[in-house]
Structure formats: structure tokens, C-alpha cells
Length: 289
Ligand code: SF4
Image (cartoon, rainbow, N blue to C red; front, side, top):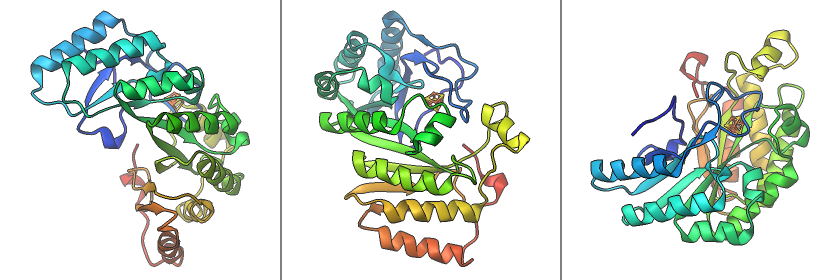
């Protein structure tokens, strides 16, 4: 298997076989992200992908889950995605879940029937980095989509029966827009009703546009207490059922988890104790992406 550069995957794909079907991220413009800055985007040829799949079949006895990397595999046209999923089905009949990252624009470029077909062919989970529900913040971070498009894409994924896992970033609006980040993100979550919400905390990566704004003072980072206040506001406003909420990523100052909205009050009580100073925050040196 020839992996190109650093390969990223969601934490829940730790045990999955990872195959790069594209290299890099087609968008690659978000101001806070440096994951694929060193990679020039390209779609791998079907020959390269099939050769990796065949090799994996020879090496691994049992493959339960497969993750299609890199940044947004759904950018591939339907004929390629169909070919890859069919090849996986024939080589790995035991595979119970295929998943990938998905940018909202790529989902919107596919029809509802296309998405349903992908589900039938084995695509069971899509991870969408929403980051924020605020249009002002989405524009500033150059996400390449607004909240309306994100909601539409999320609904399309859910209507196809594919599980939707979303990530949001606390602190992505800075001191100026933390309240807006929380309130508008909750609105997006309530509209698209994802199966999972992961809340990361902003980390500033060297060399990104965001890091320059932090250095110049244009962007002010939240302190841990402000992150908690923002998280409280977000959780308070989320009003959906059976959504698994996790804020236990290495970037978070405090680990939180539960099912929303059922566990909302429990989570708010924990946050209130934290805000009263009854728990400590993770120190900066232990935070990472
Ligand atoms: S955050 Fe996602 S869409 Fe934005 S540049 Fe990074 S990988 Fe690409």
C-alpha cells in the first residue's frame, strides 16, 4: 500500500482499513486547517485504488470497516465511487461499514438517488466538518459553504439512510463572535438533525491564515472558561432527539459526552460546576489535534 503523506481519519475510524481514493482536499482553503496544505489535490486512478484494495485483501484476514481518505472522497464522480464500492463489496464481503469525509458542496452535487445508491453499495457513514452554523464565521474561515447549503447537504445524507457525523469547533468565532457561533451552530444542528455531533476546540496551527490573524491581534482566542460558556450556550439550544454528543477530543479542555437532548440538563449541570471552578481544565501542553 502506498500512502502519500500524512493520512488523517476520524477517531472512530481507528480500527478501519484506510485507503486513499483521493490525495489531499479539493477545497483546501479553510483558514484554520493545515492538514492537506502540503498535498496537491488529485483523484487517484482506479488502477491504483484497485491495486491497493487487492493488496489489502492479501494482507488482512478480516476487514470490518473501510475508510475512504483523504479529505473529501465524495468529490469523486458517481462512476468512480460506484466502481470503488462495488470492488470493495466483491473483495471484502465481510465489510460492514464504508465511510468517508464529505464536503457539503460534493453532497449537493449528487442527486438524492445518487446518495441512496451509495448507501445501498455500502457507504454507511459520512463525516462532515461543519465547524460553525454562523454564515459570518463560515465566510471568514473560507469554508466554501453557507449554513443553508450545509443544512441541505446534511438532510440529503440523512434522507439516504447514511449516518451523519458532524464536527463543530468551539472558539472558531473568536472573542467577538462566540455567542453567534453557539446560537447559530445549534440552529444548524436542530435543522439537519445529525446522528453525531463532535465538538472540537480551536487549535491554531502554524502557518495558517488564522495563525497570522492571531499574531496580528485581528483574531482573539477564547480562554478555557469562555470556551465553556460557549459550549453551555450551544448545548442549551440544541433541541433534537438521540444525537450522540461528544466533546472529548484531544483538543478539548474538558471531556463531555451524552445523548442530546435527553442528557442536556445533566451536561449543563456539569458545565455549571466547571464554571464554578470545581473541575480543572486540561493544560495547553496536553492539547493536540
Ligand atoms: S477543513 Fe476540511 S474542507 Fe477545509 S481545508 Fe481542511 S480538509 Fe479541506
